[in-house]
Image 1: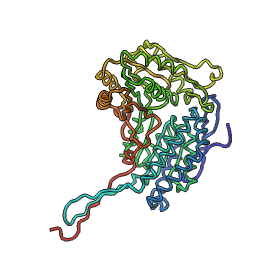
Image 2: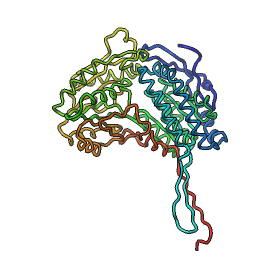
Image 3: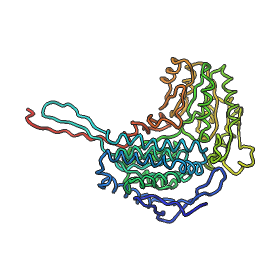
Image 4: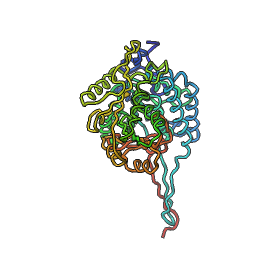
Length: 484
């Protein structure tokens, strides 16, 4: 463990928790402590929300010209890029992901600020023709203070994904990172302040479930953005609704990957493996439910062989797959692997902890490929959030769509075929927020709207659609002259 405790960022200052509490951040590759961080409680949430409310109308932010706001966001993007190596190493250490994946996350974070920097002076309204003597127009105003609760899997990306569009719209933000991954969100706040972001505009309060509950249900919040589990998302939405506050909730996924027999197996293999095993499978949109057409056993053989060849290790060694974020998450995945065997799964690759004694202290699980299950099996239906792929077989297009839709989730989906008619038919029939044809969207697409159907949540983040969550429309109607 190094240095003094990392502090909360509230009203432009680094401050300890009001009650002095801290928590320990652990390196998941070695199960060793790396930092102490202030643990925000309800009093700290009150402080942060009050700072955000004051900043909302302060001249330094509330009266800032939109073009100047855009330049400020662009400076933040450039500063993130300038500190790419440091941020990537910190992200890799904090959550265990391979260094190259962490570097891609830094670039994505910079890209969010860059993308929304270009939008600040383009959030215009419309005029509505009502006839002589009447002028009617709309304006888009910031919704206010945004409370944002983000998970552990992509702390850099998720900090930028929510805060950048909120700031572009003129909102202020109180952001609660996961206690398992608080370090880079605190760094983003510090970078933003160094770039000239006024105090109170972006506040970061790492904490636990009590902290999140205090934020989601706070009467001073005007909007809530949440990414996490379905169970917690329901509680967050209920807390927001009690104050008649809108929410965006991006929840779980068990995304289907439909591989037809005519697909380019080599291209599909690279994409499927990257989606399912990247970030140790801790990605809500990961394609972990692989639907393979009967007669395409060659693809199964390739997938199993590829999974078995992936290198595991700490993020600093830049392996193919790093550890899971915590012992709790590792044990959760182990539980599903035991369940899979009870359900009759055939383990084609992986299936447990790596044999390498140098990895014994870390939270590692081998990339795993399971076959022999039906879509009724819990292992095939529930989100595992680890490097585990369940392979199901289908007969034809209609069968593939039916199996893909037979799920409580509807976040992302992927189709691999050389036949464009089949591809578009699947895209038309599948119930998911994103459909990728001969492509993968994990970790890319700042410009693309992202969100789910069914239990995967509601609302959209990323792209232009995200701005709807952080603005509200005011209509102004003026009568003038002789309207007789």
